[in-house]
Image (cartoon, rainbow, N blue to C red):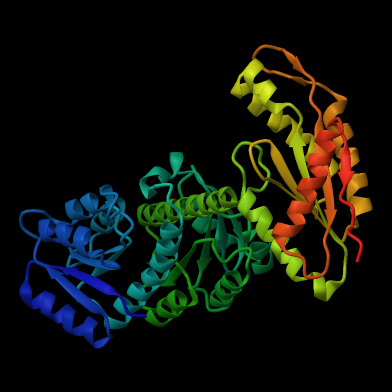
Length: 450
């Protein structure tokens, strides 16, 4: 997995050394000598990962990281702090500044590349979600409120699991499990899963692999607990998709900071997916009525017609028009007209089958696609819908005014090799006949003689 890496260090020898090591692994490397240069390059070049030294003149790594994470243009870029500092307070300070990882010099190549590739996998998913949605949601909006979140801890036995639970902040809803089967059963509902990978009689890596392979749990963040010197397990865990690892002996402050980072990321990713789902839904739905929009409904009709020759199942469409709708708008206003449309669509939806595709075709016109349905069956269904629409007047919310509403409909059954335009035109002709003959009725288009 290749990517663009920004190396930030005030010592040129260190920059060149990292550049050589990264280039040998086929990474594209950018370099900056101080914090301000890092900020400029991050905004203009959009690197995939930033390797950031801490001890620098003008602006240290902590402040640089805070500014990167405060900028909407750069806050999504993972930051790995690379420094000679190895104190507990320094690690926690870096994580709280927004760093995704904190590596101590001299940096082991295996650990470095494992961390970088793990972060790149995460970044690729986030970038895809960010590109697909346009709501402008930002990660800063998803700081864990009061540290909340549901955490599952899986360890070799219940006592070991509880020791990790006790090291977590009290604000987290944490539950420990000494049985991997129980942990798996609760994983789908977790915001974070912590797995002890340090116990020789507990195959935590297999549990992580199981969680990552299950479609219901593969998006849940994983935090692995490893022995400090066990680089093999650390690298293996990151390769399996574990989001982060923390070394024993566990430091409660570092555990809290790493857990908080993973919870924030999950909230951000969940929000992006929700917005993406909402955007996809809005792309096929009419905003006012909640029915499908014209483009989607016609595309579904075209698909049904394409399969007509192969399936030989009947297919019919219904075209609906609200009677005297212009009079409603002119008398009570457009807000009243919108309420009438919403109420009528709700009544229509209550009478149609789940397989029927109903969409808004025009202002007060609606198109219904009846799959595996003859014209007679579609006419009967539309008659039930007509009765539901006109059975009860619509009462306006603001004024309490009562409006009597009726509808007219035309039904047409598809022929072999029919076109969308020809089928809808026959339904429209039948609708015109229903309106011409008095409205508030359903007319079935007559089949032409062969």
